Amino acid sequence: MTQPVDLLAALADIDPASELGQARIERHAATQHAQGSYEVLFSEDDNDLPQQWRFALAAQVAAWHGATRLQAHYQQQVNDATHDARFAAGHAFAELLSLHPVDANPQHIQNLQSVGWTARGIVTLAQLVAFVSFQSRLLAGLRLLNGEQTATQPHAVAGKWHDAPLTLSGQTALTAFTQQELGWEPWLPAKPLSEFNAAEQATLEKNGHSDSDYFRLLARNLPLLEQRTLTDKGIFYTSGGLSRAERELAATVVSKVNGCIFCASVHARKASQLSKDEPAVQKLLNVAPGAELAHGQSARWAAIIDVVATLSITPAATSLKQLQTLRDQGFSTLALLDVIQSAAFFAWANRLMLTLGEPFLPAQQG
View 1 (spheres, rainbow, N blue to C red):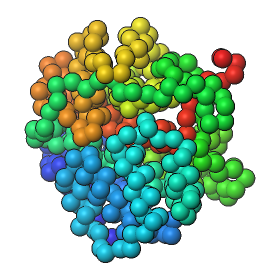
View 2: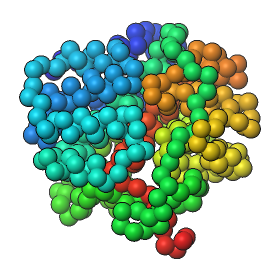
View 3: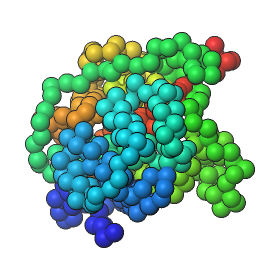
View 4: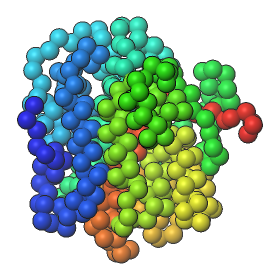
């Protein structure tokens, strides 16, 4: 395929010499590896998930997220392809991940397996849907930063979350948001470390993924996991711009909107440690379903929460007025880009965590 060097820059009409263009250059790792994730996903063509199915599903996911330019990009790559029962099951799974990821359960994985989806195919499908969810929000944010208004919604609220007392395997499940350290069990078996070759094991070890069921599950498509990991690092572990504490705050907000208790536990804990304001973070975690997330927060955090929450709903509904509120708080274009990229990335992360497994409370904490 002949693709633009930076797809999102092209779709958002970003001038490389503009403040936004320069901010994206400064965040070159995130820019490079978001594009790299795209290239891995859409250059592969295998029986697990054929390339034409990838483009067709990506176009549909972008449509569900209201990303019309992204939808058109993917749609123009689609040729006539056979859409059988396996494709139909993949389409249903894509709709669930796009619109209602918190409603996922083990039966949805079993439905895919029953019509012939392989473990690698399921992982790649989940990654594709989650990635296009990320792309859609990042594109919406970039277009806002470029001065383009979008449809708006005044505020976003906390979403619902799981309330079953036990996990699939019978461990204690979580029924409330927490800053405790949690475990996570997959609904699809993680690939055993012994089944990776030496080079693959070295890649897992380098990124600290060897002992994680979650990452060894995603490593069923290791090239894509590698690009995703580098995108994550480029967004969350760079200097300047938005503080690390506030990037972690953004991750927590997205997880509240999507109902992802596991992601929220990890990133709320980091936000508390880095900001040294555990009560404010806990106040966010305690927000009930349907209630406004920014209530009772400082003006600065409330402005961040409002932008991140409205970018996280489907379709995204952040406004220029909300971005201006952050600018009035002293946010630079680079810091605003950090807010948007942090929020967009967790549209990706939450959808994987919520639809491939579930959190549990380790026995020593029960």
